[in-house]
Amino acid sequence: MKNNILLILLITTVYSYSQSKEVDSISRYKKRVLETTEVDYLMSYYTQDGNHASVTGGIGNERLTDITPTFVVAIPLNADEVLTVDAGISAYTSASSSNLDPFDASGASGAGEYGEDDRINASTVTGSPWVASSGASAMDVWGSISANYSHSSDDRNSIWSANANFSIEYDYLSTGFGGGYTKLFNNKNTELSVKAQVYLDTWSPKYPTEVDSYIEAGENLNNGFFNGIDILDQSGQIIDKNSSTVWSPINNTLIEDKARNSYSLSLSWSQILNKNTQFSLFLDVVQQTGWLANPMQRVYFADRANYYIGNGLSIPNYTTSSNTDVFQLADDIERLPDTRFKIPIGGRFNYYFNEALSVRTYFRYYMDDWGLNSTTASIELPIKLGLGKFTLYPNYRFYNQSQADYFAPYESHLSSSTYYTSDYDLSKFNSHQYGLGFKYTDILSKFKVFAFGLKSFDIRYSLYNRSDGLSANILSTSFKFVLD
Image (cartoon, rainbow, N blue to C red; front, top):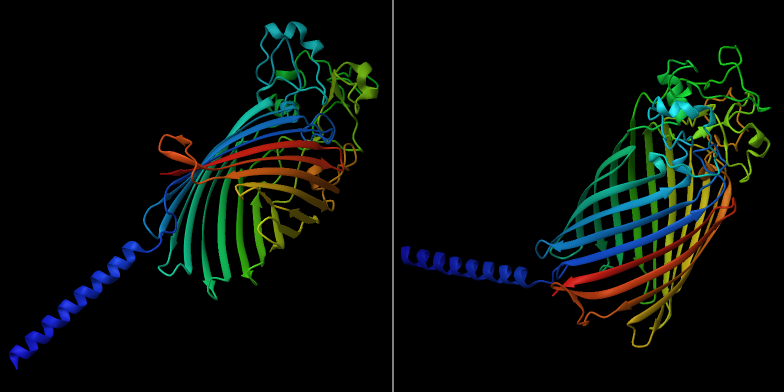
């Protein structure tokens, strides 16, 4: 009996070991989520022009150029796990932002940069919302890095993910983290996803020169930046800085709480109907709190007297580009509520006609508690050429939005209002974007960079036009490399 028990235990042990080896072998040879390391290099070049600069109160030069190189590296940690790192910069020059400090005295720019030698010509200080200044805010570099980890179950029907990100520019710092879960059903024809994201951001605020300098000078127009600089009234006459009718911003309180936080929850459902048709639906819920206005942006009131620095003869032409040498002092900076609740909802519908042609469509409706509502619709028609290695994809996007409750154009707000902005991104407008892209794919390509072979190349051009006069050109390229 004892021998029989030992024999049974031995057989059981051998069987269990063989089963374990078999499972281990299956696990070792199962298809990997990502077969090898992939590197994407993306580059975009963006230019725009317009005449509603928000930094100068809703009028002025909006010319901007931006170049954005980015690397995205996806690394398979094992058969089930992938780590993706995204790092990039955005280097821009902006005529609008440059006019945070529009004034120039003997080549100096910026409050606090005017020395005694500069005061010799201080009375000739000029500026204009239509002329880019050489101040420090004329250009900036935004940098960002993020990491995303994902883990797939053995049957590939469940995916967990977590991410963290960090970005910085000269007046703003952002940190974020989040996670998500995706479940596939019905032989992977149905996909449900939930994601949550948190951004904890901090302002390093920069203010219009005249507002910041006025507070720093103890509200005395004979001190600091204003010392020796003439201030003009609407008729172009020099005012008496010691009289009772002088310029001052309506509100001397700047940012006290520098936090700006965002919390979002995203739900999505994707369904493959048949071999030709796929659609998806999504819903986002976003809550923002903190200082949600931009402290760089000026506001002018209709019921307050206007004051200027520069050439009084140009005041009648202030709102036209012929004005190159006079600048209106701000009544206040932009002020908006410290909470904002947003709900975007939308969907995608894709249809595969044949090997040469398919269609991709997108629709989104957006609403928030600032009174802004918008709709977005786009269509793309990928057309495969030759042996399928070349794809041409024309595309079009339409956007339409209502005006936010707190928006009004230059010189249209009343000083009795609690909240106000002249940022045309919150105005009523519609836009059209026309694009054409070209993609080449050849995983057998012999072209290599170090040990990486070129998998695909993509280039796209888009023309963007907005009904408020803003126009832009966007050129973007991407290169995908795989580790051989």
